[in-house]
Amino acid sequence: MKIAPEHSVAHVLIKMGKPNKETLIKFKNIFYRFTKIAKKKQFLTYYMIAAHPGCSAKDMEKLKAFVLQELKLLPQQIQVFTPTPSTYSTLMYWTEKDPFTGESCFVEKTYRGRENQKKIVTNEKMYKLQKTIRAKQQK
Image 1 (cartoon, rainbow, N blue to C red):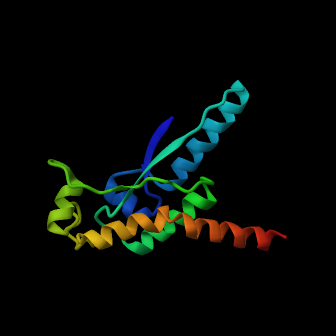
Image 2: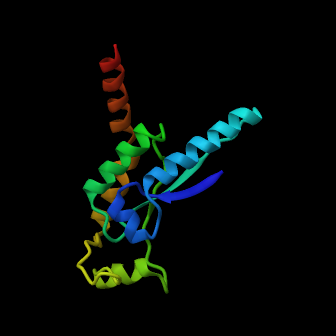
Image 3: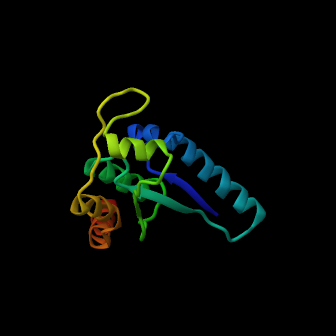
């Protein structure tokens, strides 16, 4: 089943109009509990976004830690935010302001910065290194 939590950092989720990460964890646990009861081979796939208005490289590092620790995976694909007409996210992208609070909002607009946010999560070499370190720590 494909689901779209899109992120895990609270202030980014608020800008996206999404529920908190605890809601995702609760859903994931219920899904796998019923999957086990039904004796089915089914799984969740997650749609994640980089460079959404309000999201920084540090937030992407937190997202990576979340997907590794809580979801037990390393996404191979991350969508880089693309402004689309008639959405609050696009309004934030172009104005660099939260339309609900009027506060300034960081927006990564450079190609390099947007791609860097994506690579923070999808960097497989770093994932393998972290996995090796965790394995050594557990011994």
